[in-house]
Length: 495
Image 1: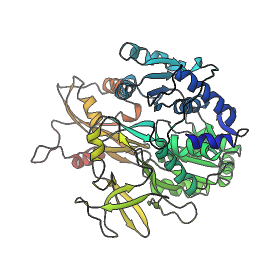
Image 2: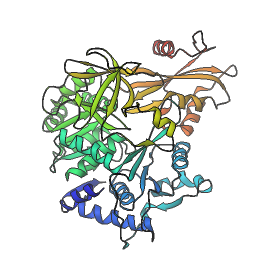
Image 3: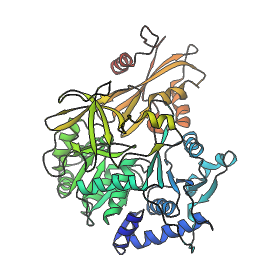
Image 4: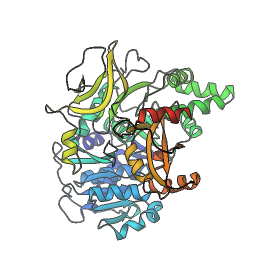
């Protein structure tokens, strides 16, 4: 946090954030975050790693609250603005959040939590000017952030990152991607996710650059901002590029030409969080004149591998390890594989997370005996670059930039009275990378599918609700009785 503050102090008059059309300087960000830190402390010397959850839309208040939590010595726990109450409650309960900061539009959603949690509820609009001495933060050991990611055990796990680990994640990108203070990026990504939070927002603030927020993704609004000529960096998931291409295709020739001309002046365009279909890369190159930079990372480590900022970018490849990051490929026995052979990606470096929150067994299982993080992703090194082949578990689905646990969705589906058994898999999709498919074995003779979808929307975030359904008398299984999900993927894809 000290380094972020030092950077902000050297750019006081520059615009840090544009929110709802209003610019805010680094000086305003420092003042606002100091006020918030003082109110959170409320007479205490240090929050001492108390977890502070916050449910606030992207914008200046969001950034100020994030910095305020850090400056008070707390651990920031961002909540997703599109999650239903059960998903929010899980994070609040799991982190044992001491405080919940919320914007007024979420007051009704959070109301049921007041009876089930001891956390203090703090409206974001009520922060006022205070005068407090702020603690000195140990950047090396102090925990800074808990982001939640789904794993093969079903329930999401809290990924704990220290201030020093965040700094390593940020600086590896600002160095490799040549960030500078004159950059201006548009952020259309969720901020409970490392892509939108670290790669976009924190890299911009570290560099003295400007981050403009768009309240919700809309292709027309995105292109309108691009045509103003101020934004020169953009990062998104493949699904967003797919939607932007579709919108561009619908425009008359004059509008297409104006958009394409504006895009040609960009310095950098990045795609990540899911595999980028080569067809989308080629279409975007036709629209913008840019070859998207693909990179590879996870919540547990930020970014680890990237195509070059300068130099050729090969479609379907993710490039080479970033600065200070080591990567190796190993077989199922943990032995290094030969060049050209597939293996699991393992990562070692200062960017790798500290632990899964209060899950020592899961943390230990995520690392090798010699300290390498086991990503679970399979890749091959060929032609001087890494290429992702897929997951070593069919229980992880990558859809629209999210990594989703199939087991978590299955557990929810099994609580429905009309469902006897189920299995969830990812189905390849050009727009989303994968869409979620569910095979259902019914407890009775009939099922109201629309009613099921409506119910699921009250239990799961929108991106975790299955898009395709198949009703079967029984699930396909092997001789040991285990569901053969590869067979199920084929059945759902063909149905």
